[in-house]
Image (tube, rainbow over all chains, first blue to last red; front, side, top):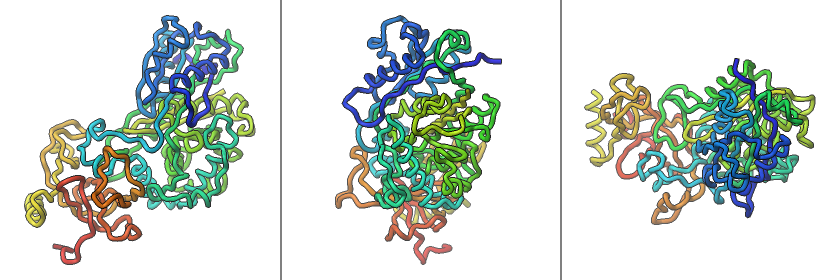
Amino acid sequence: MSTEVLICGAGRTPFGRTEASGRQLAVAAVNAALADAGIEWSRVRAAFGGSDSAGLADTLVARLGLTGLPFVNVKNGCATGGSALVSAVNAIRSGMADVVLAVGFDKHPRGAFDPRPEDWGLAAEYGSDGLMVTTQFFGMKIQRYMHDHGITPRTLALVAEKAYRNGALTPEAWRREPVTAEDILGSGMVSDPLTRFMFCSPGAGAAALVLCSPEAARRLDARPVALRSAVVRSRRFGSFEVFSPWIPAGELTSVSSDASAAAFEEAGIGPGDVDVCQLQDTESGAEVMHMAECGFCEDGEQEKLIATGATGIGGVLPVNTDGGCIANGEPIGASGLRQVYEVVQQLRGRAGDRQVPGGPRVGFTHVYGAPGVSACTVLSL
Amino acid sequence: MAGALIRMVTDRRSPSGGLEGSRCSGCSVTVYPADEACPRCGGPAEPAGLSGRGTLWTWTVQRYAPKSPPYRVPAGGFAPFALGYVELAEGVRVAAVLEVDDLDDIRIGMPLTVTGGRGVPRARALDPGEEGS
């Protein structure tokens, strides 16, 4: 039996566009997590963290305090936060440290990401001919899924409508104005069948967690949440990923399915036990597909579930209660830990206007990103 | 037989019009563009010309001009274009720009022919005269 790992502190900054640097945001999130745990920085014995494009996490010690702790930089795309979390868990389980920090932060320029073909092992023409645009992949994946499983454009609009509705209830969210499904459908096509308001935008933000061993947690006043599992997986053969010049025919594999199944197995519970979850919603289609890939429903059931409000805050399976990426934007390095922060608030009953009713006890988080990586966690009181 | 088909396709178009992929001798995985190693088993892969004939597996439309660089805006300026994956008989889905007359006429399952050459693969509807040839 491995050592239990407890989350004793969680902090985040507002997400969106800001004058502050990514590193400044990270320091703010770390200090919020420390205050939540009721400890000083000097109590932290190891740290793991990173950003995709806002600098090195270990340089934060200059602002947090030069205590000499080991601080490992993590750079793992959308799984940066999840990988930092896995490393923090292992540090506690191995006995390396009893109080560990995980931090993720980022700050991206306006507009779609602009990757370089050579960084992805692709010939230059994929960039020069316009096939290296992330939104294309999202459009093409949900396009096929809608064809196979009877999902309609209106369902995609309802997902985004819920995101903005939940964002309006979340003080730290970027998009805080409700938007109707009709306005979402009419906001202009970006990559068919996805419209402008169905997408999240790259942005800035930071989130941090303080993790403790059971012994260390007992000496704190903070109400801990158990991190039952934290898992990161890379893709297997047969998956459909961004910037693929080809994919094999036949049924697709899914790294999100692999990571979520492993997270549930490690936690010893299943999707049916989850009271609140955060699923990667880079755009509306991703949330729809990840509901099935993570085991919360069968393919195609989303059409009815979403129409009947099942994924709303008062529904049977609340999804992305803080508005997700669509309402918070996507600072790549911070997204995964924002999800965990949100579940911690929900399980502690501190989520304010967006609190899931009935006292949720089990939560789940899931990120997915290029080039086929997924990180999942299971949390419980 | 595959070789004959490749020559036929290559001969009928420009010398660079064929689709040059590769195939793993061990697990028969076919990929495009050609690679030296099989992405599934890591074993050596042999060059394999692809027929180019297939059906549309999925698609989207690029409605706005991608960032430049890396995108090179055409001489006539940017216009929305379709792209997708065409599933070939060889068991591979190849990303291609779809050369269609009307963006509203794109349907999953429509027959297309993919050709290589300069730039990324291009797919277009079969000419009526080419059906079954």
